[in-house]
Image: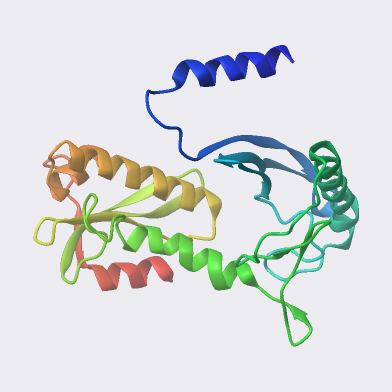
Length: 251
């Protein structure tokens, strides 16, 4: 209870004058869970949140893993993983319902699965588990590198019709992608070699953050490219039209 009181005090001390509108608070949970071949999978597992508006209060549990499902997001059967983890999610949902004195009300289906009162069900196409990872997650990931936020109004544009300057970005296992820039079109982004690969994807997001910072400091795309990659007079970027660069990255 001491922790609960400390949290309540922090909330009260952070309140601003005026009417209180909707409130949402959450906590994220990370951990290690049994995966395929007896391996442990770590990372973000859950987000437990609570919202309040006037006299309506609700609690939600969001998961960021497919370890509870009979098939993974690529549609591959994982009976051992499901058997080890699904009962844990079911127990967590049951315990939450009991603690809150409320019934579990599954939310609407997402692209990845269908929530139930005890867990998550897969999607099926003609009796075969759907590969929702390739259908939805991969396009979503790649979209981040080709479309700037705010309907293209925040930071540099992330697409160009003509020639761009580019520099390969290397990781521990080789080239992860290409950082590119075009002053003519006020555009710059990262072109990943394999957006499905978490190392390449995560590295790409970090480069997008750096480009955004360079944009906010008033640098042109080519200046940002030079600064971020350490270009010198003796180390110039390559030049190629963006469509061809994307073809190279996708090979």
